[in-house]
Image (cartoon, rainbow, N blue to C red; front, side, top):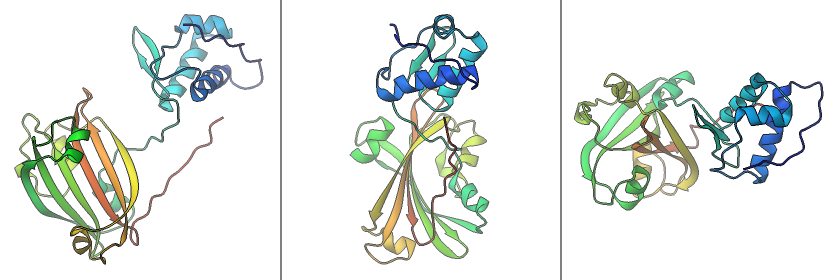
Amino acid sequence: MSIASTPPPRSQRALYRLVQSDLQRQILSGDLQAGDWLPSEAALCREYGVSATSVRRALLELKRLRLVERYQGRGSVVTANEFRAVSPMLGLGRELRHRGFEVKPEVLCNDIEAADAEVAAPLGIDAGEAVRHIRRRYVADGEAMVLLDHYLVAQPKVDYSEFTGDSLYAFLAVRNALPAHAREQITAINLSNGLPSLLDVPEGQAALMRERTSFSAEGKPVEFTRYFFRTDRYFLELDLEMQE
């Protein structure tokens, strides 16, 4: 595959930025699609007239933006045609404590149950298969703030019945079962079906729902969690960095 493109003109900017900007433009415009392999580092050096160091730095920047993935001995492949924000994967209790809240976790249930279709899909299992369902509530500074529904697949040497409620990720860490990465979706909803009473708010109250699917190092889904946040007590704050 050729990425037939006129090499960008020289400027005072770092040379790796010239390579990054041109490849980034082709990816975001759709000229290079997810699944397309980029030319080898040697070919990119020839095409742009830059050193291997500049090419590697450009590819690392594209990887940091989640636009490509690099595989040793194989090269770099396009993974997305849009920017995706990347944030540290914090447990919620840690996040709230970082914000200065005094946090009290409560376990409301910890049972085996059959996964419904909405839970089974992100976990990559069939509806009706058994999952561990742990429902928790975080009380922050004496008031309910967030309800958490964890749905967990069985993992070797992990007995979820031993979980006492504070930090799920700390519990998994000591068992060498921490997920490697996760994806989240955030949606505005109106609370119903018993959720308002658990968060001490009126029926139909607006809330923020975060849905997280976590994956093992092998890429297997191991956790699906829904977080229901009271919007009068919780907000999202993002630090954004300008990219050329």
